[in-house]
Length: 249
Image 1 (tube, rainbow, N blue to C red):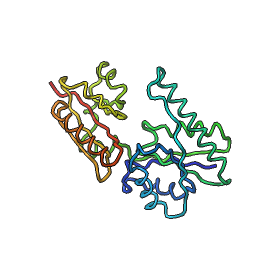
Image 2: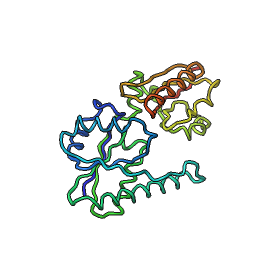
Image 3: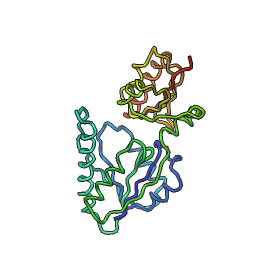
Image 4: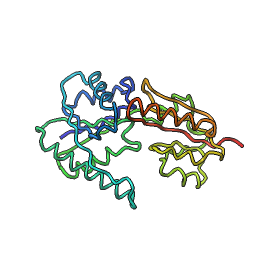
């Protein structure tokens, strides 16, 4: 069975690459994780994208997402257990499909950057020996953040570290001073006020409802909180990413 993992960017149909469109059009059945009402209108955005780009007949099968331990002692083990549970759930769906069916997984942003789909499908392939899969990159929120703010992520000749809200405090303590932060539902940057940081923040990047805030963290944190709350209240979901950079002096 052939499986295509397709990066679809932040949700705007114009940000799907030509290569991604070709892969989408080859798919007969799309498998998506059903995460309930917490994802707001993401399902409608996904459907609009398929209606615009697929051009043929297809099915979407929603699979209830297995529960995940959000406060484990062993974070990595908990995530791997969740991946295994997802793979088993998807394997049951594949068993009910006709031979020769081409399956697709739509991945917000880029499959290679803070996304679990590749790891889940690797486990799926280990459960079923007739599976082969490929990966089509998408435009990541990191790229969109830089483009929307018209900035270069790295300083001249310097590095850029991509991290998560969970790891931000330890990264700053290690002396890192130029970081892109993802998966930060609690705005961990709040703990850095008063210590000389600047921020370029963006939510729902690349969509018509994109929100951007930039400036010294001390001055704009309240604006970020308000913008974040507004987006979530309107759409039921918010995907935000930001660049944190220590200010000169």
